[in-house]
Amino acid sequence: MSIRTLLATAAIIALPGAALAQSAPTMSSTITLGFSSTSLDALGTGIDLTTTTLDVDSDIAFGPNVNVALDFGISMTDVDTPLPIGIEADLMSFAFEPSYHFGNGAYVGAYYRMGDLDISVSLLPITLGVDTRQVGIFAG
Picture 1: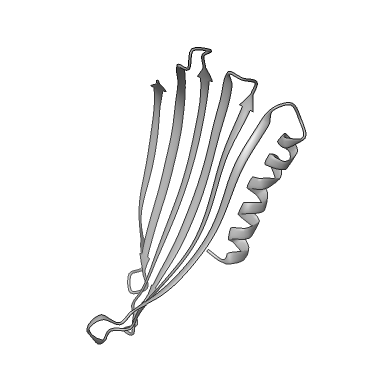
Picture 2: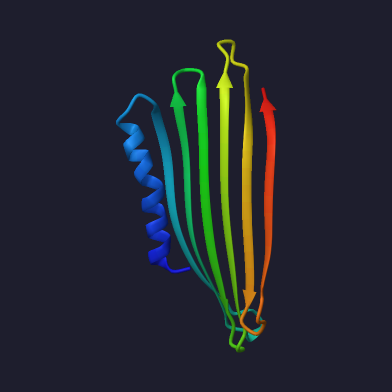
């Protein structure tokens, strides 16, 4: 996935947040963009790791009692070796958590979370992937 795709995704996610901030519900968001580049020279091998991440965590409050949390994350890692073997790992996650908060401090809610991990090795003609989905309720 290219950096252009990553930035376009961030803009698409942030745009509704700007619109919601102008109306009655209140919204707080944190957007984190990260980049890491590392070289491992252990035992004479030249392995380079490059990771780009984007995380968007938002809380939308519809009055004092109703809250909706929206979380989105994407991480792209490339592993380059001196051999003609390259590894790419892409991880995407999403969470939707509406909740109701009572006046005494107690709360109840539901959640939906999904994750998608794709790993590809340049020598293999396939991409290995794991998809996860969780649905549940919570209280406190």
